[in-house]
Every structure is written in C-alpha cells, then in structure tokens.
Image (cartoon, rainbow, N blue to C red; front, side, top):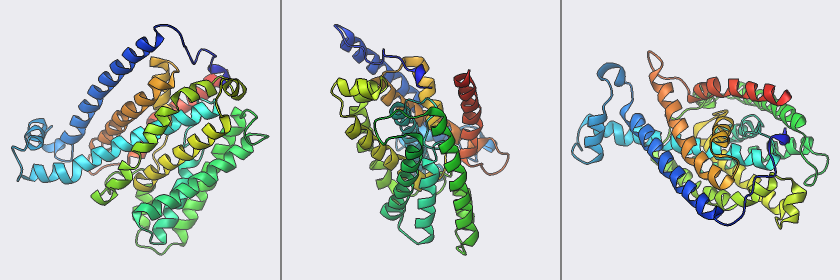
Length: 353
C-alpha cells in the first residue's frame, strides 16, 4: 500500500518556495472562510430550528452585543458556542492524527480509530471515570496511557524489528482490527461490572458526545495548540519519511527520534480528544484522503488543511447529528461512521486491486 506514495514528495528548487507560500496563504484563506461558514451554521442550529427556522439574525445580534439578556444569548454563549468549539477542536485533532499515522506508517488506511488507538484511549478514560479521576489531568492521562499501550502493541505486531523495517500494510490493518475488537470487549466488560450511575452516560459517550463539554475542560482544548505547532514544524521530515526510512536518514532525518516524537504527540492529541468527546471514528481517514487528492502530498500544506478542514467537517457532522433526528439528537460518531466506513471499504478494495 505504500506504493501510492512516490518520491516526488519533496520538491525543492528556484521559485518553489514562493509558489508554496502563495498556495499556503490561499489555502488558509479559503479554508478559513469555509470554517467561518460552518461555525455560523453550527451557532444558528439547534432544537429551535425545527420550529422557528435558522436564527442567523439573532446570532449576529448576540455576537455583536446587541442582545445580551435574551434567551438566545444564554443558549448561544453557554451551549452552542462551547459545542461548536469542541467539535472544531476534535475534528482538527483527529484529522491531523490520521495524517501523521499515514505518513509514519506509509499506509493510506492508517487512522487512530482503525488502528485501535482511540479504543485504547477510551479504555483508559473509562477506567479513569470509574475511579473518580478529575477530567484533567486524571482522565486525560489515563486515556493517553491506554492509547500508547495499544499503539505500541500494534506496531510491534506489524514490524519484524522495532524501528528499521517497513510496516506491513496488511498486518497493520489486521492488528488494528483485532485491537479494536479486543478494546470493545474490554469496554463492555468494564461497563458490565460497574455499579456506577454513570453507565448510561458512558454508553452514550462511547458513540461520540459533544453535549457534555463544560468551561472547566477549556484548558484541555487549549493544550492541543502546542501539538499542532510541533506537527507543523515536523511537516518536512514527514515528507521525507514517505520516501522511505533509509532515504530519509540519508537526507539527514533522525528517523527514530522524529518517529517517536510524532507518535507520542499524536497519541496525546487523540487521547485528549477521546477523554472529552468519546469515540469518533474515521475522521482521520476521510479528511487527509480528501485533501491529499486536492492539494497533493506535501505535508506543509496538508497539516493546516487537515486542521481547518477537519474542524469544518466535524462541525458539519455535529450539525447533522443535531438536526436530522425528529426528536433529540444522535451521537456524532454515528454520522462520521456512516460517511467514513464506506470510504474505508472503497480504499481497501482499490488498494487490493
């Protein structure tokens, strides 16, 4: 499967930097507009949409401070805006996580959910919840420990030596699927033996839930910004890693250090999101795949594209989760699975051919 990547990942030469810079700013501009539009839709949507239609004018008045004491102002500042911010952060983080795993493993089907990393994070988070840990850092650290344990186990199965041999695409996917099933069994076991009153909440949270975010968890969202910056700084080494570990090492990349750093940072990123929002699958598959076909394989463009595009995509999926049901709402993980699972099957079928 690594054959889909070519050695044209890194293009250097006169005038290329200027062209890259122009494409970078154009990409940021267009995707920022898209993000602003989806955020406006997210802020204007809610249970009242079915009765009163979209409330764009009211949202506009509240944001400008013209309507501070109305019911709409309370709904917007305390419910809708935190939820939109959470959805954007989760989408950006999961899309970026998928991009990094695909670059490190040279596999277009690698993704935190498929590899079982999200499942390991969920196990750690549930253990933390049942033990009464605080949301941050207790539950977040437990989720990080679970994700790292699963990731290391899958990588150990997929490679004959720890860092130097190439990963087998089929063994990696089989290992991820196996770990997903195993993590699911452990999660159900933990829930079945629990006498906690939070069981119902945990079950809903497992399918992806953005309705429980509070201002006390805002620090968790802010903590992902250094992870974004570090991954963006590592964009050029990721380009070189796609050419192969030996080729990257010959061009001055410390393969072991870069790989270890990116794996730890990405696992931390995914764990933080899982500890807040639960299991939301296939975002790291859909978004990098779309942008890789639109703008090419250069990670200096793909990293910001996945951050902004993933944020817009998750806000839109959450909008569907809130507005499609006749009454109430559905977990956002259902929407992302309905979109991502068919794409995964298609990519797997095409790769097999």
